[in-house]
Length: 117
Image 1 (tube, helix red, strand yellow):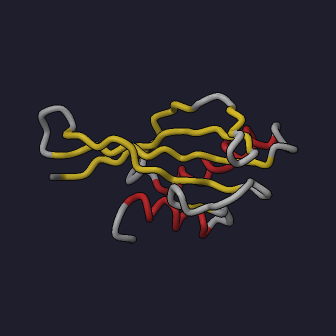
Image 2: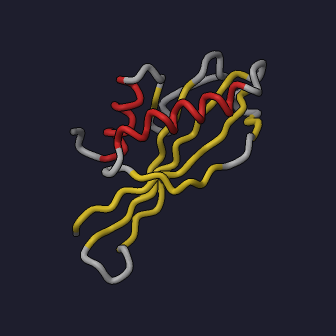
């Protein structure tokens, strides 16, 4: 186990053959597929003594391969099942988006982690 659940997710994806990064680490245009794992909102879960933290998993594919973005997201979702129940899917995902800054198609999905305060 890593120091944070974000790093656990990245390590798991890397162990399963994905190029996975923290936000801001991958530089330049997208020339090959990669995944970015971003920590989102963290808040107390209802009135319980635990927190819920959201993680956005964003997949990027080069602009020449727009149809590959759905396949890559499905592969990541399948791999993430191995982290259940520590990391749970929200079953929410975004539609495909073309990111002009990196010349890539991107989709994302969200996961959650509950942790005792």
